[in-house]
Image 1 (spheres, one colour):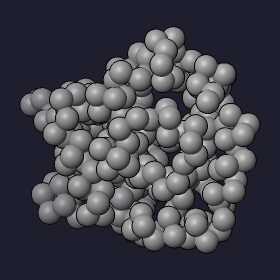
Image 2 (cartoon, rainbow, N blue to C red):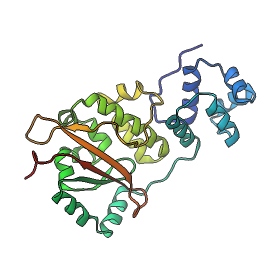
Image 3 (tube, helix red, strand yellow):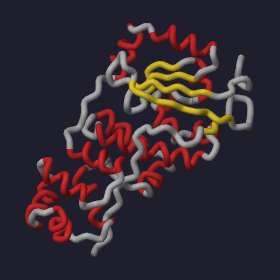
Image 4 (cartoon, one colour):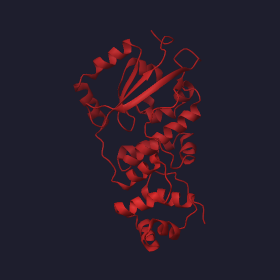
Length: 257
């Protein structure tokens, strides 16, 4: 059986099906047999890039022994791509909700806080956050892009592991918004960075959905080479759709001004 081509493009339902089939050393005939439909139907599905009904999708997903995150990712690729308001519109909504007062209060308690859209465009962040991510404007105010910048490499301890973890989150995010022009622009810009293509292509179908981190991220505060452990929590912001709120807790005494 021929080796599957790498999953080096935007997440795609049909490309993912073919990669999973090759990964499990299955022919199209045996895949169709396991899923309980004809091989000619599967051939047409892949050739014409059409989408099966829910019953067929469920049988296909079951035939690949997916973990819960992979199954969710494949299901999201099977569904239509989601829409997302422009970042500036989301910023304006948050401003109208008076979130700056909340951010200022968290600064006094040495708590990092940032509002993001699902593509990790930074909408609003407090001073503690911005001290920890220098060069964010040069990365289009996008955390995913910043992670693959020289500033992130300098700031984040054990950068390669953190970058791989970030890519597994990015994969699920791009899958949900894959037809959105700015999601495609984000992916195209990431592809131009030195390290992103290597990590993206070496982690096919590895997906994380903002689960609690098993360990803190270790980040070097300004003016010191000693990494500090930063415990991050991220969740949907209930007062504004399409917005995430992330908190970071750590010992900020070394960077207090």
